[in-house]
Length: 140
Image (cartoon, rainbow, N blue to C red):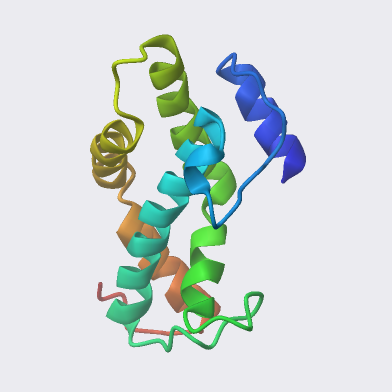
């Protein structure tokens, strides 16, 4: 994952010092890390919807075992490299280039567009069904 961050930062010409996040002081993070934090939250919310729509239990994760929404976090992580990181860095670049852009608001708007364009939640639902071996006869 570290290499994915580096490659994506290079693609968007963003200075990258590595993944840094202090839960007690999230605003102390640099713009790219703040963007990743916000975007990860939005993608986790989408994963919540996907997990709930299939009737799966959020605490029953495979990787994030110690969280009350472990399965949600597992599903969100499946989309980190292809969705979360590129969206975060793309909007971080916009905010770095134009200091007037409010980062979180810009991320919300871009995330909404990307969720629709990429059909993110339906993709997540399909992944949940695949992981749980749900055969719904082709119904969505």
